Length: 388
Image (cartoon, rainbow, N blue to C red; front, side, top):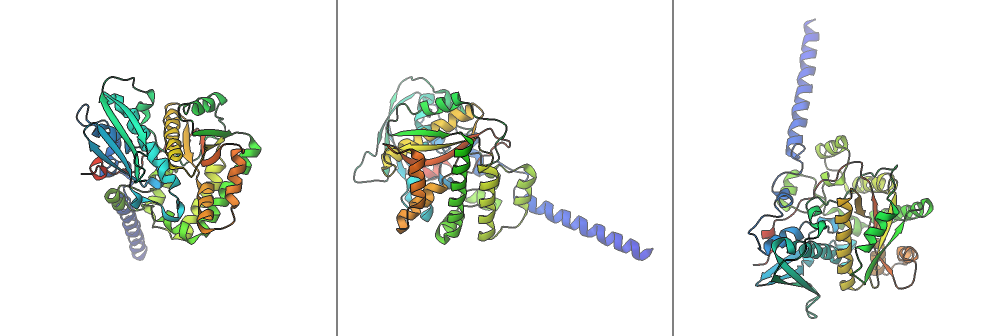
């Protein structure tokens, strides 16, 4: 009996120690602090600052969608001017060899900035790529004092988050919503969007997205450069304030907690999880796919315009309860094929989806109704992105 008591006490002690260890790990990994800390403050304080200050426009700009949450932007504030400058040190390497995704993200930031201008009593006018000798100079925004209508999209700026989780398989996206999304680009003649909602075309597109994901995982350079932007530790998230996180994957709560408490996985295992999630969650649950189109997807001006349209669509979708996510794998493989001189397998697929004629593929996307709410990604503060 005494020996049994010793065993029971020892077992209870082990369980308590294990629970304490898990609790400590959960605390260290921010399980109880999701969306909190300095890395997430920009989402809550985006409208702060002196009334009428140009800095308020930058606070809105940094909440824009961007590739791998690299936040590849800098801003120069001058009297009556804001210059948007590409920070090319924050590119994704072999994932984005021609900076296609970077320029789309910069267009998203520009759109947020322009939408926010009337909220600070500015009338904004923009010149794209204003300096032929400096391709990093993306836009010059001139500001004049005056009243202008505030777009209803502004209210969605702090709520817009990419939703990478499962979408409701029982709900379709109405044709009227797709029409309204496409109409948001009426003033952007270099870009457009095409939708795919039929079961056969969704199946075929999904299969190509999965195949492209597998090709990225099999490419050591692309796998490495993509993985470099994943932030697993809570301390890393709070210090770097960028990159992809577990919280932003829109996992169910039990899976999110388990992933944060568990140890970091190796590259091969991480790639396998990503492929499985792409196939079984993102592709399988998408009621609609879209293809952002440009007249010349190699032209940075068209890419920036595409980013402006994507940001508008994402904000409008958020206001309607519709979730959205880029699924860039085919385009990333097409860029990689071009960069390495490989056969253009995925470029041919994208050309077919674009339908020929004057339009070419810029960025594939999916949309639907979320089953798990998207959480914010970390953001660097304004002070880190405004040039002195």
